[in-house]
Amino acid sequence: MRSDERKTTMLDRTRTLPALLLILPSLALSIWIIGYPIYDVVYTSLHEVNRFGRVRDFAGLTNFAKLFADPIFIASLWRTVLWTATVVGGAILLSIPIAVMLNEDFYGRGIARVIVMLPWAISLAMTAIVWRWSLNGQYGMINATLFQLGILDGPVEWLASFDTAFPIEIAIGILVSIPFTATVLLGGLSSIPADVYEAATIDGATGWQRFRYMTLPLMKPFLQIAIVLNVINVFNSFPIIWVLTQGEPANSTDILVTYLYKLAFRYGRLDTAAAMSLIMFAILLVFTAAYIVLARRSEEKGA
Amino acid sequence: MSQKLKRSILFWLVLGPFAVVALFPYAVMLSTALKPGDEIFVFPPTWLPTRLAFENFVEMWSATGFGTALINSLLIATAGTLLSLLVAIPAAYALARLRWHGQGLYRQFLLVAQMLSPIVLVIGIFRLMAAMGLVDNQWALVLAYAAFNLAFATWMMSSYFRTIPKEIEEAAWIDGATRMQSLVRVFLPLALPALAVTGIFTFINCWNEFVLALTILRSNEKYPLTLQIFTLVGGAYKINWHHVMAATFAATVPVAVVFALLQRALVRGLSLGSVK
Picture 1 (tube, each protein chain N blue to C red):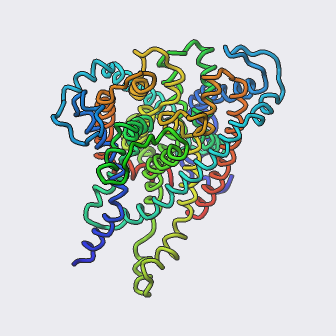
Picture 2 (picture 1 turned 180 degrees about the vertical axis):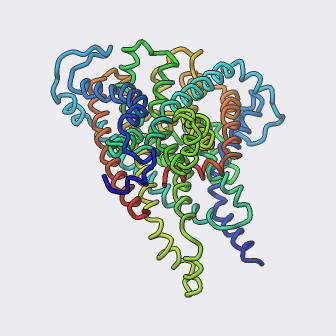
Picture 3 (picture 1 turned 135 degrees about the horizontal axis):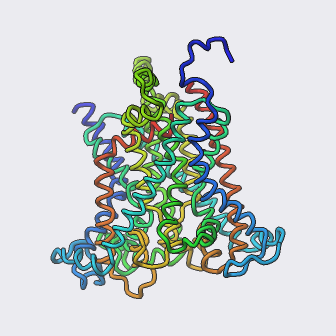
């Protein structure tokens, strides 16, 4: 306790008990709906479970061993790395120029902002349904448009093979990640005071130099946070791949989340699926830790 | 040519391709939704229908069970949002206004909770709901949506609450109001914009959720819109795409319009809440 007690008001005193009462409902709901499932997944992953969900014998790490012996799991793991890296990389690379442009004054900026943010308002499942129809090999509008432009001369079944389906899924992933990414970056850009640029312009800096040596370094904390949050979102993203290809043909477009879902609810292998959940949980915790470190660092800078 | 005009032309040249791709799904929805049924499966396909088949929307409404699904979506998302706010408001108040032991720990708990998505825990959630007898029950979704949006809502609102001057509340106490009275009559009205922005984002999240609805609900008459429309393209041998596109159009355009109108306030609110 410091001696400036006379200055403290009722709001400044340490009030642990009332605070605990206030956070109690949120803790209770989280422990019930999020905490218990975590416990259950751990428990299930260490046991043998039949396909009706009845828990049998303690199995140690057998489920994990089975998983790492499963070539589809290993392939899905690598594909998840590819999926996350390309979607997040693409979204960041495209969002930087978009955010920089939206931060400047130009004709139609209001409309441009609405168009850029638009994919955000729609559920991923709906977006994916519309794209699936657009990509239909016989009657889809993608093929129709490419015929009319003379680019294609025969129908292409875009979603029938990995070589076309997965890049398309990545592109759609990038498209729907841009609104959030651009918003975070725009928030960062608008916090850079304009007089910094004016001074640099007077000193003769070109547009590129200003971007490279002023905007980019000042944006660094926002870029880091945008990357980490996007990695978590994209890693967890289920509807795009589920609606477009369900991980098919022959599991070739499965990522961890879609394979997890199949394992649990289609093949009825709850125990192995639980082990897989835990591995994904561990991966997410690493990213979360990275986020906490980055957020704390940028908070310290801001303070 | 003025500087601004030059810049505008350049920017739109760069943004153009992105705008085309972002608007493409709307063009497809509209084109297919307004085509007469017998023009859907014609090769090669065309953008423009021979006549505008507005009757698709009427047919779709009964053929897809749109009304029921719409009401389900509204009920589930509203209940999930209200429960989430109800639980998050006191927690956000404690974070913003009180000093207590364990505050740092609680913040980190919120961060971790925010990172978790339902898909990673889907097995555990399903088994929990099964144990409580809530499989194929919409309340399971309400509880889960409230829990998974809780961290975000608490985080957003506590950032806002901190911007409301403490002196206003203290003045109310001096005037003889109890803590509870000043909270309800003075503080919450001032916090209303924050509640609105947080509520809208939570509502959109609930409205758009897919995995848990897919896992927990079994009977068609309980499905929300996303799931109902997904079911239309899931198993059917012949998909009536003109109905499906009319349904997606009717389901997405209202949300998109609301989002576009509120976009400025929402984006400002989000960047204030999440980045600061």
